[in-house]
Length: 333
Image 1 (cartoon, rainbow, N blue to C red):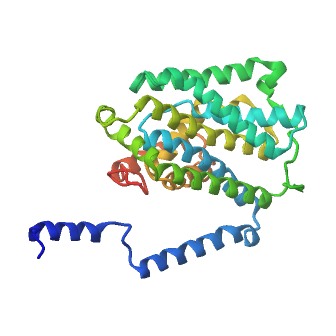
Image 2: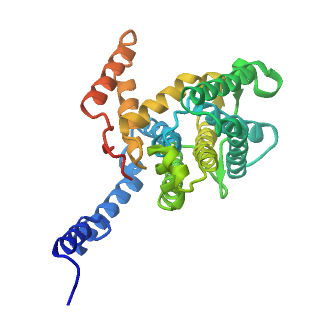
Image 3: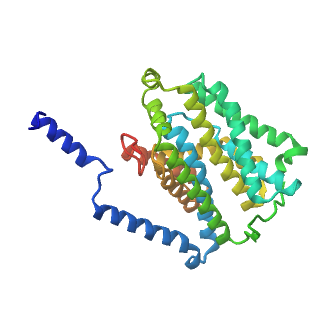
């Protein structure tokens, strides 16, 4: 005979029924079917979308999406506002540009080295970050972003100065030249998929739970044995790697880069995209990327009022959907 009280058994059964992991076979089948349809749509898009302007816009969205998903690990999961994300974006771009134009590197090796150099840079920057919080964290990341931009603008023999680096070679992957918008689309989508899969593996482990604990209450996380300085450094560094990858892709896509591509305004735009899309959910920032990019393009003809209109749109989103378009009030994963 079961000795547990009836209300305990009922609450345990209710919790089990509400557990998202306990889904019915029909629900799992529908989800799988949705994934298959979505995958087919994404892979077939360049075959029926013949407008290169629209496809190019999607490519830029994908590049920003990679950046914002990495930033979401820092801002959405850990709760730290980084205003220097564009600097890591630039480190990846300049590394690829210099390696390919001056040292004859291929795109894949330049991409890997760009990610490694971005990681090293983020680790160096994160050493003082582990001891500061709040406004001081924001100020330090702003300072790093501006230092990078000024170095890129002033170190003319190495970075090309304000004129930047031009004539970046056409990338080749396994001997295939990436030339058309459709070619870049598949490369960008592949890198976006890599970003999602690796971040998914990160946030679904003890590492991800520790970051969420730090975001919710850092002191409580420390009391529970979480090494908050270590996890903060790891989150900042890992989130920055993806900005380096995105910058590498931007360099070969544009075939030219300048310091103006990596201003603090770019960091602010990425933060807006993450907030509008929804913090603390892996794919939610992509919605913010789409909304802000389309708004920027749609109101381009209203050059004098474009930023005013976009700012009003953001305020409306924050008023009526403060957790973001696809976020939740509890920032669930």
